[in-house]
Length: 326
Image (cartoon, rainbow, N blue to C red; front, side, top):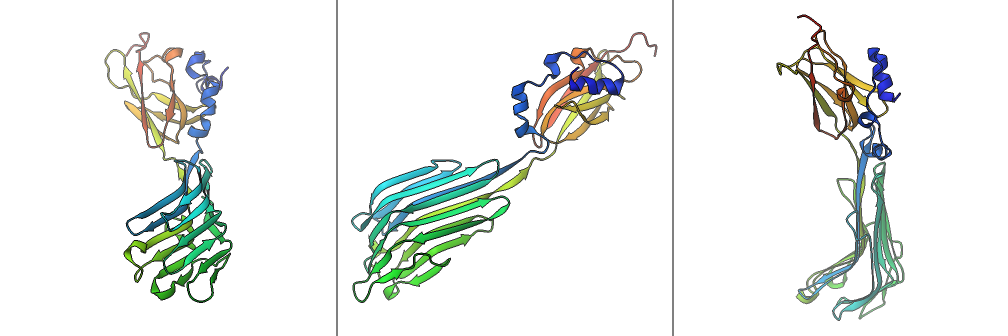
């Protein structure tokens, strides 16, 4: 005897020969339990990565290697990038990955080498990288590295760039021409983090064609937030097959896929049971004097895949018991 049948039989004292097609839970339906199960909760996270972005004046607007999770593309690489006569970069890459159900995300971005004429100096680097991770049960974190970085000044000694700068290390450029922020870490109010290995802003007194901003290795990680599914409800209506009027006193059971009665209600003309999102059958467990129970094939309605916030409705039509004199 199937679980739902046994449970109802124990409740009503009647062995119900329900059709297998009505209440048997096929394998495919059981596989849906992860999505519709009582205790299910989804996590949502996102990540993005950009290897290189240069915007100087009106002419130079270069973006190389972009990745997004979950939208995609999740990885990108550009072997050689020309920056409109001002410089070049090699092996620029971006990667964004995650686990949707767990809500964990990770992003990495960087390049193998960069040379860029800033007008007041020339920037040269080896490998530059930034990375971040985040999840619903841990805070978002990130880090960055700059290898073999140097600022070649036209006058005086060259300026070496620290390889593992502290977060938000900031330098003023010569002549007040802007600022450079290394290992920039921006923690947003929503719990996400943005890490830029290097972000340089160029301003006056540089000519307009060289003013702007460029960012090397930028990543953002937004942790997944646990979104518990809101309660739903099932309303059962019972009517007289002859008069069409509502029937009071009908006991309605709401049964889960394991055959457990999760809740019951007694109709006025209808009654409502609140449930968690899931897969259910709604069954007539008992009827008042003067009525007959529905045929076995009509005793239960389902399966119902009830989703968060939804209100499902079922309708049972009861025949009067002609042997009973009113």
